[in-house]
Amino acid sequence: MLLSEIARVRRTTTSASFLVFTLAAFGQQPAFEVASVKPNKSGEGAPWRFVGSRAGITATNVTLPFLIMNAYGVRDNQVSGGPGWLTSERYDVVAKDQSDHPSPARQRQMLQTLLADRFQLRLRRETKDLPVYALVVGKSGYKFHEADGGSDGKNTAGRERITARKVSMEWLSERLGGQLERTVVDRTDLQGNFAFELEWSPDPDDLSGPSIFTALQEQLGLKLEPQKGSVEILVIEHVEKPSEN
Image (cartoon, rainbow, N blue to C red; front, top):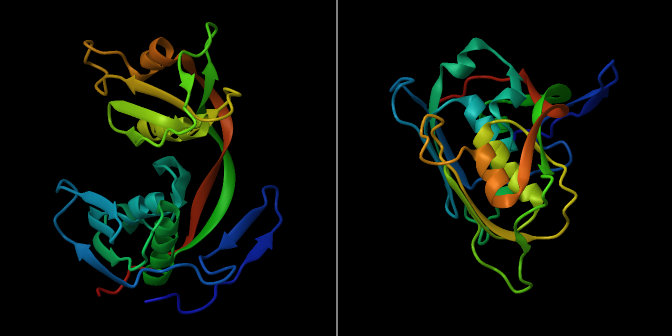
């Protein structure tokens, strides 16, 4: 089901200007061909999963804030507001995508449309000073090389390893932010695409391997410096429990 009406956009000027928006503000966004949203009663400790593929998405036993994070590419500390049931109510979502070549960005837009339609979700964007990490080059310089012009190998980022064949420092910053659950800002001043491998121990109590901070310095010649920075957050203006379908 698509959005029932074109959303209203209004700008309000206060000490911190903000934007109240819903998904169809500037025209209809992409939507899944068919989607099912059902309550999950298995409980907080039960297994959960979120799988995105060319066919669509399948989410099991997830909260609405988790879906918002995946739809907008933000982290837990970038979603605020809303009623108490947001973190207690869990859902199963199955959404089918019939497009021939769905990109991750298009699929996020489809999920945004689904949330606005089924949950009547309206969000407000604000900026807030939060702890961030700045990714910088260490004193001895970086220890990797630019990607070959014809390089088209697969880039992967997992829980303990990143394999990059042709990526920017912005790409690396986003993946590091996902690992550390904190925004990472690229301040390396390195332009272009690079190839490297990074491996670390995901368990801080496991001394057999380096932490992600140590691995960055020893293997890539990069550092993460804690700082404060302006981070965009999403404030929930309105939300409703969906009817089962």
